[in-house]
Length: 22
Image 1: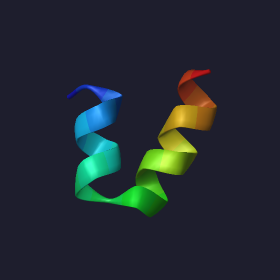
Image 2: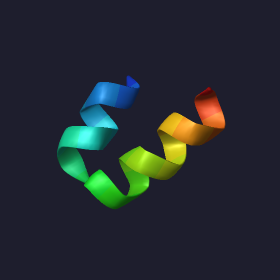
Image 3: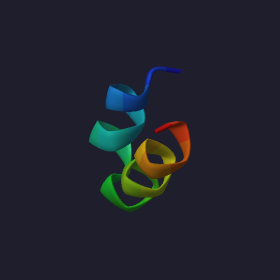
Image 4: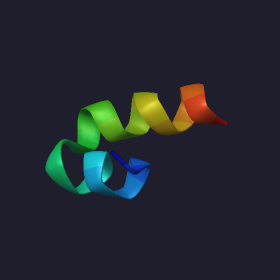
C-alpha cells in the first residue's frame, strides 16, 4: 500500500506513516 493511498484514505494516518517512512 503506497503512502499516497494511505494519505488519501486517512489523512491522519497518512501523516504519521509519512513521518515514519521518512
